[in-house]
Length: 329
Length: 267
Image 1 (cartoon, each protein chain N blue to C red):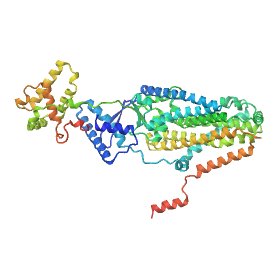
Image 2: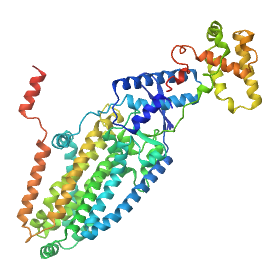
Image 3: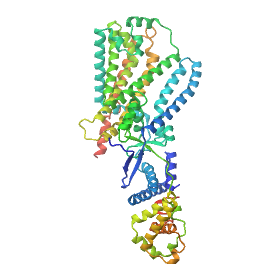
Image 4: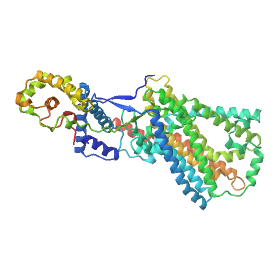
């Protein structure tokens, strides 16, 4: 085994291994020599076995020598959460508004459908919402009558199902961006339709307070998270289409990759929280838990989310002056 | 559709090398192995979760559901990030995911190519991803396209044993450095490469063809430079060619190492 090959084996086994300056110089020297050998063998068009061997060495060493990833950078979860995530969201806020508009359109469509044709409810509701197919007033009465607290285990199981389902939906909303955004738009629109159908159904039955008390605690986080999934999908679609941009497809994808990762990670965190709230808080109704408390809790969450996404990580005036002062002393 | 099975990469030093692209079948097999591993891990862990369920009904089910989901999403991300672009299935089939420019993947690339499996696996068994892989000239599924990654084959290529061909053998021509210098001057690079190639492939030749070939090559070199009889007497044609190749490729390296130029990196 050659020296370069054994060095590469060691580096590949232990990726975080730091070479000393001498080892680094030696590694680079060996890489240069092998590259020179390959150039020589290639120009002679001889000896395919040696050429293949040198190529395999160069291919492996190239990745190590030209590695641009910053291994020294320490990931700080707090900085990521309070700065990177809201900044990333704001950088692509137009995609978020578009995603919201599609969901709202779906909700209006669903609302009108169920307002003019109550039979439409059964046609558009998926199986997992089967308990909403009946009369909302009866459901509210049943929920308020049923005062037996579910066990912690069953709530945990329900919570896990919600998390898995909602995170999957958000990832799909992002991934479907690769269908030129068509899949993302359909998914957002359909989510909006379900929301509109349920909302209008309960409002028509005079159960607006119950609806808000039931939906707001988890929905104030869950719905924006899924819309943010759509935002990520629309960003992906925009990069794929590249309308009016001079950059290549490869450059466009490379530019948005870190932002997509940041958004989808933030969405997953939001949906874990929403899943916990939905299972352990939203399912309690009056008289166990007053609707006013639930609505206030949900409204507070929504307000905090708006402040977090809208204001967090913004440069303060003091920071701006410090930065401009240091740039122009 | 201009499909190729290699990706040519030019280094900043101007050296061009190629990466062998993995085909859809080998990738599907690697995925099959990974799928079996995830299924096996889930099955084993489900026993633990059933026991947790005995403590509190539903609790084990909750943990089981979450672990299954995390395994499904996190398996590819974890292995490809920490194991340099290789899951267990890819390792078995000697495949690796790399950046389109031949570099290691960044974390965002690993995450995106794995999350976009949700669209690649539609409608069943990665049909969308498989079709994209066949259509794309670099064999990229949609996740690879968005993450700027490719899957390459990394066959284990052992070091060619050139030492057996030229170095370490007694070379009677070495006693005549001025004639060796003349030989290097008169022999072209193509002629030297041809002689080296003949030596490398000598074992794959028919015995009679091998004798004839080396006789022709030896006569060709004898015509170039006339070495004294004591240097060539009793030497078979093949040994004479080997001596000539040793003399030709030993140039510029005698002061540093006795090995041939192309294996100067040998430890």
